[in-house]
Amino acid sequence: MRKYAVIAALLTAGVSLGWLSARFMMQNAAGAGSTTDGGWAEITLTNDNLRSTYESGYYLWQGKVPPPHHVRLFRRAKDDEGNTLRGDCAIQIEGTIPEARWWVVNTDGASPSGSVSAGTAIREANGDVAITVSQSPVPGNWIKPGAASSYTLQLVLQNASAPTGQKLVLPAVKRLWC
Amino acid sequence: MAKYVFWVIFSALLGFAVHLAYILFVPSQKFSAQIDATLRNQGTNKFEILDAKLQAALLPFATTDDLVGLCKFDVSKGSVKLAVAVPEGYWTLSVYTLHGKQVYALNGEQADTQSFTVTLSKSPSLMSQILGDDADVAPATDGDIGWRVGLGENQGLAFLWMPQSDQWQRQEAASLLSTSSCSLQIADGS
Image (cartoon, rainbow over all chains, first blue to last red; front, side):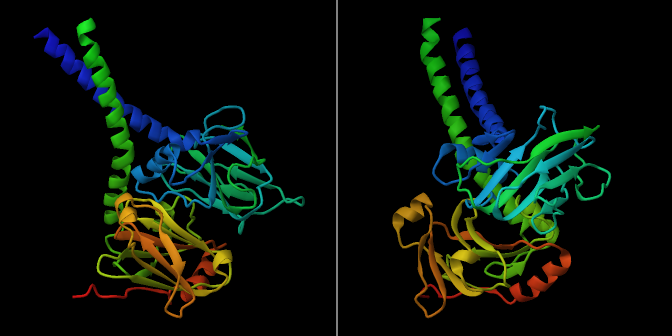
């Protein structure tokens, strides 16, 4: 009798671990990304590699359409000092946005957020942008994050001049206040 | 303990199989069911401009200012012709299967025209149909400026996305894009 109980426990453990590891890896794939550039993780979706299956699974699971292959999508859940991005804190994204046909910065959280795009951004004289993400409005480029306690920042480059895989210098993300 | 070695290895292999099966099938099935529910009011083989909030919820790269046209297509009864008129500016057309796999993409620079057609049909290739591979693409043959796209699956979604700076620009662009159409072309021999 004990033998059968051990076998049943082993099989249950195998199935549970397989299921849980799949859920965990899928949930974290879009945050881990393929490559990282100064805290930003790039999501590279193609139809021909296993990592993409996890990354696109992240979107499919939420009923969202995975970003098209020509999009270079960068995500991060922490600022430059390693603090988790939280809805009750203010951060600033500052620096140069890489050359692309179009770009947008927004947040990916439980509820929809605002965004700043190539068409709406107010730029510095040298072409750099400074975007504040905070609950209360601030002058200049401002994004209100969703109500979630934590969120992920997204930078989407449409038809970037630099091809996928080429390293890019991406803007810094600094905490302003909490 | 040695008597359980077989069952330990068997359980590990079973776990691996569950992991793979989950990753390969569950998200795409869930996506298909969720899309059916989300787009239940969108007609099949009909071109429609999406509501701003719906597009931002559906497309992780789109904002509420952008303009997104959608054709939810079904090529099981014949080809579906997408006749698109776009305003000047950057745009992309992305075709996905109903399981969320991108099979075709076109952008304004590649098309180099503001009026074109894309004819979607079932791929004649049996391997494409079985594997759900990328689309077979060829130039249009019916005198239109455009492309013919053979698909591995019957149903899918074609998104025409155009970034806009504000709601006023969005409305302007929407008036031209709304003249686009998506229609079933060829009856299935019956």
